Length: 468
Image 1 (spheres, rainbow, N blue to C red):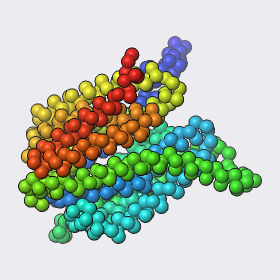
Image 2: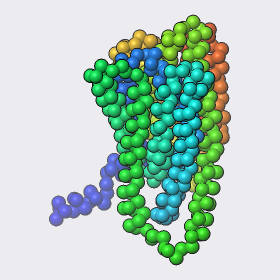
Image 3: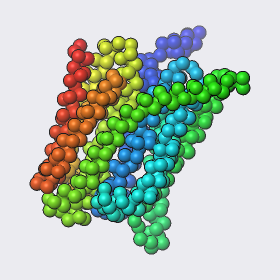
Image 4: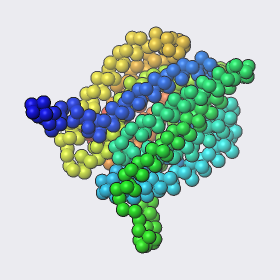
């Protein structure tokens, strides 16, 4: 009897730890954090493999296509993914199972045609983009291969957005791991086969791995969403009756399409503007390094070390803040709708405290051991020097991620867009004016000032919530 009573007591009064782990926000954050850590660890080993297999110059050429990829994602997927996430959450709250399918279908309706259009444009215009915009003709074959990944990315991004809206982070996390492992594994196997046959290796293999990884991630998310709808929407909710007027269903779809488009269009425009500036920045850094005195090969090597080795290491501890920010926006939005200023204030204060603590520890580590880490991981003295110089960025990088997400949750998307543009324009000023005189030190000073500007002006509208 006593033993039975003990069991009942445990089930009725679960421990505080178990109650917290059952919270969708905390559980989702843990899942995304662990996934992000594993994914970035795999990514580090992958970058070490690429740097030693292809060399710093080829890594720089490969990194030059990243802004183009980001630009395409902003145009075809980013805003739609956020719209799917927002409207999926609303439909789930209303217990309308079939509406979830309509949300996802509408997301595909916008993202797939735009991604296919981007594939055609990038594939056909690769030579022009490489020579006239990126100032490096060797990027053209990489762009043609990478362009094939856009439709796969659009599909799994919409599905991930749907599950984010339901606060079910397991599927997006699994998709992220699948993409990373398949991409790395395919590049390794292709490279191994080429070496055994005595064939000449090209960095185009990395672009091919990108396509294969996106395809694997898409297949996984399609299976997951089919299982989800078969278990939840179809089994628990009413199927559409054949007597339901077709015009009414069309009106629902058109209404939903208009709402999602009006929500996603400003986000898409904001991301496009930001990524255009980032693309200009990426293309101009090697060119301005040549004005400083580097050769073409040296400038590409420095750019490759910065973006492919040093910066990913600096951003690695930000996995935790990235995971929190993904789920922070809907939580803050919900609290703002309920006028729960106390909850918002507690969240802001905790974010500032923990992000500054994490950033301070990482800054100390990178400043003291950056050169050793660069030599140990990447076998590159330059990587170590850049890691040390970028150590000062850590507190602002990690803090700005969460502050921006909080501002988005409060509906201040226009304000954050202005901050991002201001920070990027400041960095571009240093690219054009400081790099030709001071080299990479001038650019890193611009990065630091841009992050500091974002931090200060992000805290201004949050000041009233910070007061206890």
